[in-house]
Amino acid sequence: MTEAPRRTGEIRLHTAEDFAGMRKAGKLAASCLDMLAEHVKPGVATEDLDRRAYEFVMDHGAVPATIGYRGYRHSTCISLNHVICHGIPGPKKLKDGDIANIDVTVIVDGWHGDTSRMFFAGEPKVLAKRLTDVTFESLWKGIKAVKPGNTLRDIGRAIQSHAEAAGFSVVRDFCGHGLGRVFHDAPNVVHYAEYRDSFLQIHRAPDIPLREGMFFTIEPMINAGKPDVKMLKDGWTAVTRDRSLTAQFEHSIGVTADGFEVFTASPKGLDQPPYAI
Ligand code: MF3
Ligand code: CO
Ligand code: CO
Image (tube, rainbow, N blue to C red; front, top):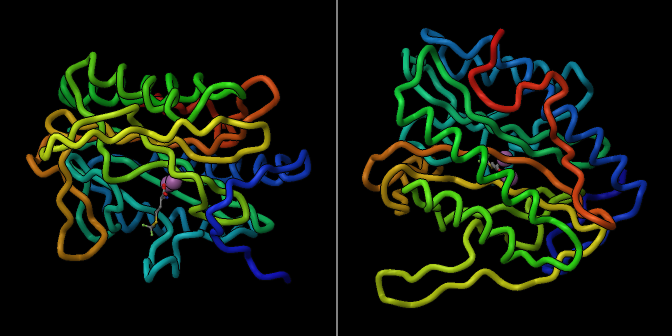
């Protein structure tokens, strides 16, 4: 066993063999979400879903990357309704109309597959459904901007313009990230091109050129209300400050010679809820 490399700040460029490693890891992470789809329904505790994910990943000879990560103890993050991300699985039961993001990261032969999707418990409200659809579309607008010659800012612009045209806002405090043998590597992948903060300071996404062999996630968090985040006292759970609904989808992506490869596509085609199962 060689030790896992650490984040160095350099953006790594990967080989064809590395793409094969990510394909396997991404597929297992996506299969785990496929497995969970039929279990997401009113009355189910989020810790039950987490336990199913743990057993699934271990049964496939892999490990959940989040267990032991900065003291986190679970295999998934499950973020309900106004929880933006890093919701901690627990005894709380899903209710009819809840929307949930389930995020799983697995390590297969040293490679990280990181993906999340939205799920509906029962029947979502109209706004929840529309927010979920726009967030899914925003992720795909971002993915389609991935090709050598474009920059990280082009990804952010595609996401931000779609989400804001729908009247929603893009979370700025969390971003996508490089990954591979490292879970959270360079670069940061922000989901906006630019914005002005409350001090009128302009923040711009870096115009770093995309190059063949880069691996990173795109994982936009889109709010129905304002973009501001509040952290709960557990140190993990991030919620919308205005308690508005929020949604997220995430894929792990590789930059190819002429575009992108999505490592975490759903083998069962369960890309976007409702999942008819
Ligand atoms: N999977 C999350 C991401 O998309 C990270 C979760 S870290 C945890 O980057 F510790 F909160 F699980
Ligand atoms: Co991620
Ligand atoms: Co994730």
